[in-house]
Length: 175
Image 1 (cartoon, rainbow, N blue to C red):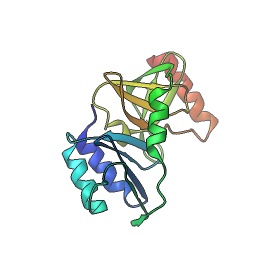
Image 2: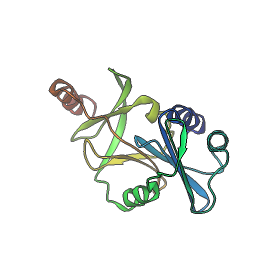
Image 3: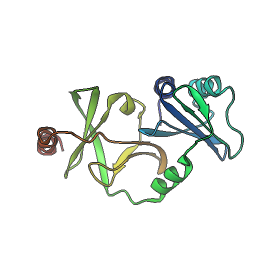
Image 4: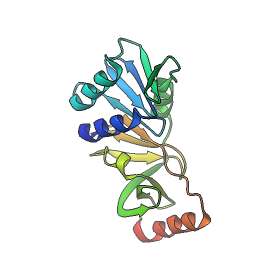
């Protein structure tokens, strides 16, 4: 299950740089390229915010984009990305730790028995229930609810070896 209020907050922030929306089978895929979520009629706040930003929601099969507060025709195929990850095998289950890292932004540490990875905590707050899965430390983290892909979050790639070493220590501590 995804948190409607938190998704709406992310949408408001994303419109400053980039925001994509694509209709698919009565639902909408929305993305800023760091996250991608599937929203539907149960996400009322998010849909209201999207309708306000784009002046209307896209019709059947349509897609729209905003880059730096300007509506554009240059819209990536986020449906293709979503469908590819939905059908991919996801080898690793992740669990969120209560541990946070504060560098450029607050991030949440996720672990399994082989590695740890980090995502922005604002993105993690969208996740209310279900499973977090991925294929590796730097691969997209998929949010599943009852076997259905609900969202995708890109992990943060550490810039320094010291950060990678710190994440490796979390595997021993928190897994």
